[in-house]
Amino acid sequence: MTRKTAGGYNGKILRVNLSKRTTKAEELDELFCRRYLGGAGFVAYYLWKEVKKGTDALGPDNRLIFALGPVSGTNLPGAARHCVGAKSPLTGGIAKAEVGGFWMAEMKRAGYDAIIIEGRAAKPVYLWIQDGKAEIRDAGHLWGKETRETEAAVRAELGDDRIQLAMIGPAGENLVRYACIMHGCHDAAGRGGVGAVMGSKNLKAVAVRGHHLPEVADRERIKEIRQSLSKPHHFSEYGTGGPELPGMEAVGNLPVRNFRDGLFPAVNQIHAGVMKKSDMWVGMDGCYACPVRCKKTVRFEEPYRVDAAYGGPEYETIAAVGSNCGMTDVKVIIRANERCGAYSLDTISTGSVIAFAMECYEKGLLTRKDTGGIDLRFGHGEAMLQAIDLIARREGIGALLAEGTARMAQKIGRGSADFAMQVKGLEAGMHDPRTKVGLGLGFMVTPAGADHCCNIMDAFYAQEPMLKPVHPMGILDPVALMDIGPHKVELFKLSQSKAIIDDSLATCVFLGYSYQLAADTLAAVTGWDTGPAELVKIAERILTVFRLFNLREGFTAADDVMPKRFFQPKTDGVLADMKLDPAAFDKARRFYYALMGWDPEGVPLPEKVESLYIE
Image 1 (cartoon, rainbow, N blue to C red):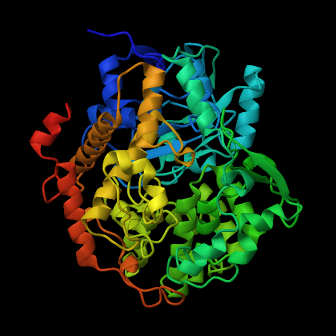
Image 2: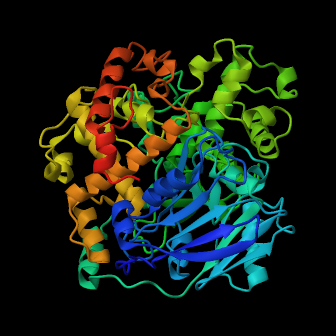
Image 3: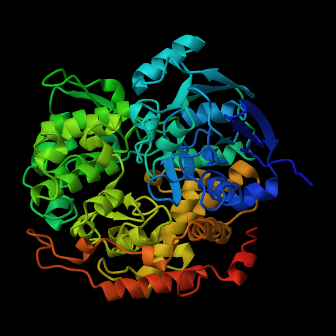
């Protein structure tokens, strides 16, 4: 029997079949919502249920899923997020990408909790959703346009400047395997190639506008939670990638030249503090209903024109197309960020791919003949910007780089796989496991690959004052930064599970929703009598479904490994004499499997699957 859905939910998902040009609404069951919450949970369930083994990630039978959480659309700080998922064309497994901004608020007001898109349109189209109605419209006139042009054209066509768009640029259209989906011009569902899946379906954009929010259970409690979270935040001044970057370089955490080197004195020239002191600085922006305002905005005219509509680079971008590519010119980094936003390219994978190509070029594994005459060396800004243009168009050397580092290494060979910085095909987030060992375990076992978000930051739990949020979970003692024993593994599992809950509610990690506060928030929105223990079980369910999906696609425990480079010292700097122990990480991986209720090969035990009510 279908129940009335809880507070915070519309109780409906939108089904779209682009091959048949049909749309229909389906009702959601409350028990299902309580088991999977929304966001990443909905993505896990529907991919597991509906995408058959061996489905071509760029074929019509793949699903592209946009999933909101129950808190989406409320005025809670950090509740302006949602999840986009599909079978990844980059990894062949799970693609899961979270994004903030304003799109989800309009989507919730438009009457749906999720969109599930299948099929492939015969010609370019976009989806227009308004107040419970959905329409598939022609987009031939939009195909080939960059994201800002697309946004302006759709708003003009529909006569409403408050319409929010999830859209792709030329990189998505050209099926770059790490193309992202831009929500507006500076919020990206970045990882795993969801933009390529969108492009494969000939879907240019999803435009949304709505006016009716679902009711919540306890408005007064939500008001109290909002007030408790509306405090000054250190990211409000610079966003990420601020004056703390020199300290990251000093301890070895800043990726330098494809994670190879340690010293990078130019870090003092590329961080957000430098941007803010210059005339390029515009100010800070933020997501829907969030007081933090952590997004920097910059613009300038020379030597390139950079449009303020594309915001400004955050830490991951500054590191990926900056220090990891040896770039010392902050304007080159900002221009690269703008071009990636215009083309719909994931900046992390883009920077990593180019850094890998630069090292291959340096070692003679790629030549000027291969690059079409581009001098693709570390620190050469014009070469990097040319490479970004070629990647988006899949022209020249860009056709190879558009495949991602794993496929590049397979084609180039000659030992290049040893410094292809990816796990399961996903390029690593811009943090070094040689300084954060728990994060290294996360790179290994996270279902989407080397994702830094669904993970742990070890330093947070190495100090007593930082432990208060996990006291209710039984963690009372600090765990040393470089400890990779059972205490760290248990702490990692709790942190990873909490990240999955954030991605399913969906809330932002910057706002500090502890397990207890997340449970209180969910109860206030939905009316459920939920608590932290239930959230842990929900996270285990979602992570286990993701694991089952990957296993069905051929992944094994052998894929839960880090690149060899992370087990080697850096060439200079504080980590020049540091290398990690592979045996210790192998032991940690097996203990993680045991904590999850999986066998020594990482296969969920039948009893665990049944206990989690997984179909």
